[in-house]
Structures are given as C-alpha cells and as structure tokens.
Length: 119
Image 1: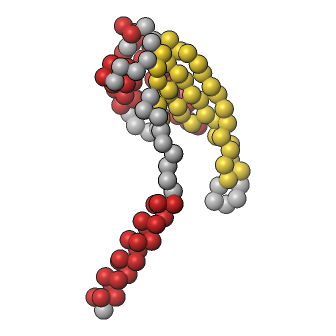
Image 2 (image 1 turned 90 degrees about the vertical axis):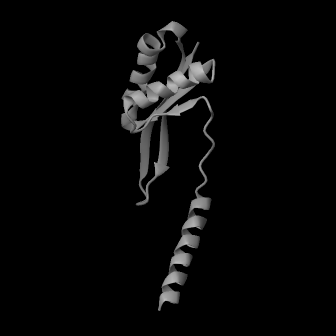
Image 3 (image 1 turned 135 degrees about the vertical axis):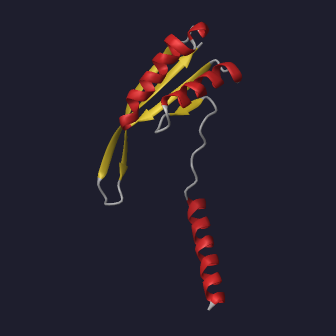
C-alpha cells in the first residue's frame, strides 16, 4: 500500500516536471522591468538599481492591462522625483495590443505599453 502511494507521488512529480519544461519562458532582457502586482516602491527600487547600480543607459518598463497606469506612474516618478539628478528622458513609448486564445477558445485582446527611459 505504501509502495503504491510512493510510486504515485513519484509519478506526479515526473509529470509536473515535464509540464514545467514544456512551458519555457522567453528570456527577459536585463534592462527590462515587467510591471505587475508588486508594490509601487519595489519597481522604483528596480529602476534605481538598474540606472545607478548596473549603470545602464536605458531601461524598458513594460505593462499589460490594468497595470499600464502603474507603469506610467513609475516612469514619471522616476523622472521627476527618485532619479531627477540623472536627467532621465522618455526615449520612446509603444502602445500595442496582445491577442491570445483563452482556454475556452475565445480570443482575448489585452492592451500593452512599453516605456523606454534613457539618461
């Protein structure tokens, strides 16, 4: 009985590992910040680290859907308050739409924004 249980657990682990290997995430560039559900100051710390710690000349701030507002706030707060001594400028703003198919088979459109800040 216990051997069956152990074999079942091993089977589940192997199946889950193979599913994780199938879903390989694309590489995210070093100078890219993906805005999500973290607190605002976590992203401000990332911007500061990339410009000051890693001494990058430009960074990308990317967001989708309801996080677009937060991405704009991060870019503007970086420029005007937290990194104002670096004289940051907005190099480029891209607005786009991502389309994908849901599990139910419906096509879903999500707005995206990419803001490029440079020194």
